[in-house]
Image (tube, rainbow, N blue to C red; front, side, top):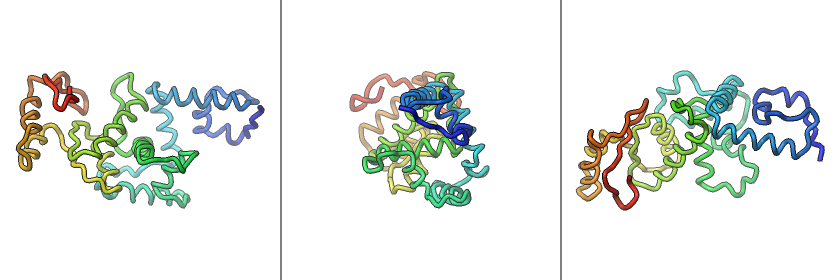
Length: 231
């Protein structure tokens, strides 16, 4: 099935990256194949993902240079203001929804994942992707952690960029989860609890259990499980 693609659209940098290797006279099958290639490259190719992120910002959709100083409750309103300044009469939430074809079946999980990814894409506390294997898959993993932590009392993470994006969304959507670093987790929890969780963290968050130190995180290798899930 022929799928006409105007030259004006094809020449757009973002479109050309979203549909790589598209033939001059594409069919619908060519477009689907090209879009699939784009998603695979975004998920697994670090430099491709970073290049696409850079192109999005170069096209004007980026946060202010001082965005790192915003309070968590200012992030989404400020991004909405930025969108409107580009002449687009949409809110941050509207913009997230624009990425879905079937809007009727967008549940909380899909929306949160897309919102988190959008924050990373436009430059709010973006993941630096320190490992060669990191790409959009790494951002998605962080988004999963932030989403499921929203059903918990506490989210313990050493990753400051992950924590900032999560907190911005928690503030916007009225999620009460408290975000803690491993360093302050025991002190904070000890004030309000006296149970097995506090004892477990006191025992496990120790120097001897540090497996490796990364750019923005410390990885602990626990010596036993808590509730059968912490390893």
